[in-house]
Length: 302
Image (cartoon, rainbow, N blue to C red; front, side, top):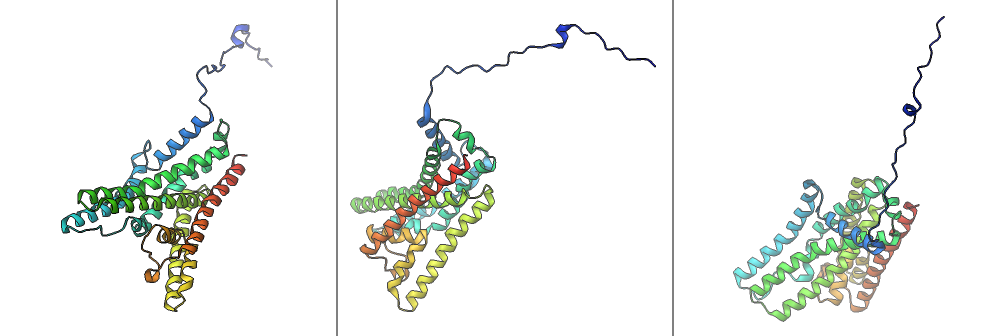
């Protein structure tokens, strides 16, 4: 029986030495604050689909247009009819368009955080100089800024149109400033709630459905209970019921302190004393949302 003999090879053919070492980085170390700002700017751009595919731009840009078009129509009507005031107060506009705002936050909150959870990239962020609080602050600030842009842009359209229509400058400026305060608080509150809900699941679809459900069901339930209380003559409980929905919470704050007309049944909003409770609850929800996000991402980043 023949035995197969190994083919002799030269030692140089058996060994290969490759220098695959990484080059060291000798440039500037921009540090933690730069990384946080970069995460904020990229997240803000992503909230409107900038730097992403055309498909990602469609919904946020469409919602932005939907928010601004009614304001432009109102300005045109005011100019055409030579009205002495706008058809809608600045503080009322966001409440009227709350369905569009809810849809925006439902679509963009999961986009901001769910993909990082789904693809398990959160620990990679924390391998860099940024910490858990930096990540949460950047994401929170980016979504709140995007929401503020969405809600403040139509107010700017109303204000510019009112000035072009030569309406009273002092009244319009005061109303515009009150409207900006209102939508700033709304942006912080809605962004916090949306991010907390979206951070629970890595599935974007589940996050969208959950955010819509929380905002819509809470508003519908509170409005129904307020209507029942008004019909039964127990109007004193209407203001307290309004504490249990983000939309009515903002409505109560601005009607108590910003001179807005309330959307509560009967048009009677909370008193100043009750308004203080509204402010405390709104700020408490914002702080609680931030704290829950910190706890959530400390677990995820382990």
